[in-house]
Amino acid sequence: MNKVSLLDIIGPVMVGPSSSHTAGACRIGLFARDLVGGDPDRAHVELHGSFARTGQGHGTDRAIVGGLLGFQPDDERLRESLELAEARQFEVKFDNIKLRGDVHPNTARITVHRHNVTAQVVGSSLGAGRILITQVDGFQVDVTGAFPTLVVAARDVPGVVAHCATVLARAGINLASVRLSRRAKGGDAIHVYECDSEPGADALAAVRSFPGVTLTRAIARVS
Image (cartoon, rainbow, N blue to C red; front, side, top):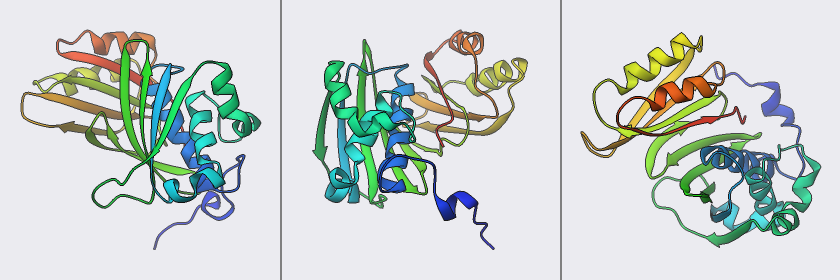
């Protein structure tokens, strides 16, 4: 029998009329923000399905931008996030898109730029504020945001997973799950480590020390 949580019944504490279109959308924005390491300089937000059809009326645009600015779903500033972004000279472009395949109707593809770092996230809002990140930089992933998450980009070579797991273990960080996505053997790969606690700066530096690791990002719990 499927378990139903209290959150599924009453929904999250949030600003906005819809947990799917606002709370979940905000958390997708938060994930994208953390992936580039802070406030983006500019972003391109592409809305799919119900997000595209009704997102503006339900505040999806404001929720995503609020997340990109670092606001939580219950932050009253979500209501004026578009104006705050403009005041901060944070450029955001919106488009509608039809993504291929079996894609949840409440889905956004967000491309963010911060200094010399660019990242792209595809995320879906599942209801009651829950999200699922399905792509990072074109790699297939499966991240709920329910745990602090370490994202590592690296060459697909032996030893990367063992190195990362050893670093986290020495830092006293317990792993909830490990996922690896690659396009081809020996090519580029994305590692996703869901953790019971957030990796600190020393752990990130130790992970980066492994040859072939090109990027590390600690993503705060967003669900």
